[in-house]
Amino acid sequence: MKIFNAGQIKKWDEATMAGENIVQTTLMQRAGDACARWIKKKFDQSVEFYIVCGKGGNGGDGIVIARNLLHAGYQVKIILSNPPAEFRKATLDHWNYLSREFPKTAENAIVAFDKTDLLIPLKTPKPLVIIDALLGTGYNPGKSNEVINRLIKFLSNADKPTIAIDLPSGLTPDHLPPGEDDNLNIIQAAYTLSFQAYKRSFLHPESAKYTGKVHLLDIGLSASFTQQESSNIYAIDIKAAAQFYQPRSKHSFGHKGNFGTVVLVGGSYGKIGAISLSARAALRAGVGKVFIQAPKCGYEILQINAPEAMFEPAGDSYVSDIDPIRKATYGIGPGMDTHPESVSALKAFLKTRKDALVLDADALNIIATDPEAILALIPASSILTPHPGEFQRLFGNSKDSLEQVELAKRKAQQWHLVIVLKGHRTAICTPDGNIHYNLSGNAGMATAGSGDVLTGIITALMAQGYPPTQAAILGVHLHGLAGDYYIKKGAAESLIAQDLIDCLPKAFLKLRDKRHILFPA
Image (cartoon, rainbow, N blue to C red):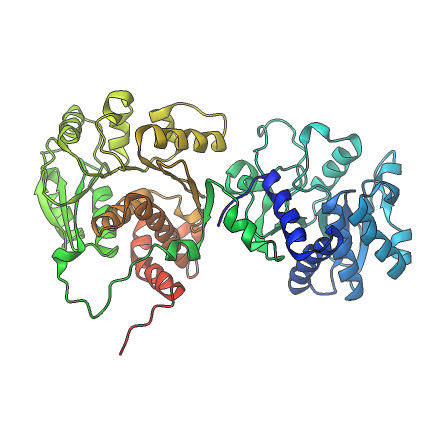
């Protein structure tokens, strides 16, 4: 799924109207109808709605929603930021329709522009829901006025569930709020009903905390525009991930040697569990053989916890030597520590390594001790999987998470690497300059060992022949799907890394089902 910026979204609307020979009033009706359908499914007539409308297209969507709800017998009160005489054409059209169909509702609308002290009565015998149709994708924070700011402030303090239309008022699609301590005027929504595709800002924590749960509504925007318009930013859903998945046929005559060999290097005294998790995840992800190169102190633990994997001693308490195995894919770093012996071992190995590999955790911390020199040793197309703190140690500070992703994109291009910047919406930055935000996963996955599991999955996919970019995208999505399966049966707080491994079989089945793969009897 491509992600478009505000300018492209406007062009998308225009292309749809031109392609179907319709006017904005018609497209606005479509958008409002889609929102109203969702709202009517979610809430019955015991709920009363306050719909706050701006003078632009977002306000027009709100007016269409109001008409829909009134026709369905809901109680609706409308609050306008400006008098209707200031409405733009399509919004004015829909206001005129509402005025003719429901004159009493139109007459009783509160015009905030006329209020010196805005005190909207929010006490009602019915449950109350606010619909925020104040500002849309064209909002420019530098041009907000006193009335808009007052309305946003009032609604933010109303302590009522709010549904934002397209995006919460005060947010923009392409930029993040300037900071948490700036007394920001942004609506806090319980739900955001957005159209056709995600806004980029929704995929970053600084903005996502305002959107609530995002629901994408299809309003029939031009498919040909989507195909032809370029974007280097994508959202990876189950449909996109399934395109990469190459299932193993149950009638395959292959043997374990046909499905790749993984070598996982890591562990140290007290941190053997990390490399054990990676090994078990790699095995669950379909690789034929797994070797673990770890310190001798982990021998018994690893043979018990991962009996299907083969153990090779790589030191006493720390990794001090990495043994090259031909035709194997390496994943290095989980639990490895940054002991001088391990630093020397990693540098020596990278000097001789020519094939792409996966580097995580302490391997990244070792690279951060001398980034320019060690990054130059890493084979092209290798995958780095830092969390934000590790990324900062590698590449420096960023003012916010969006700037950090942009920096990751530039570093992926500079060093010809795939950088998996981990988070709730993990961003996979590739050497071609593309950014892929993953949509699977949940907050329960913020737990120790989760990244070690991901390392095992991605390394296993590479060993099976997936190109590095595909291995990263598919691996991250599988990892998130496993987490999503867990919280169907257990609380997010109780999720641990081993649960992700246990749920991988269901994640693979989900991909198989999405591709409608049927085996012959």
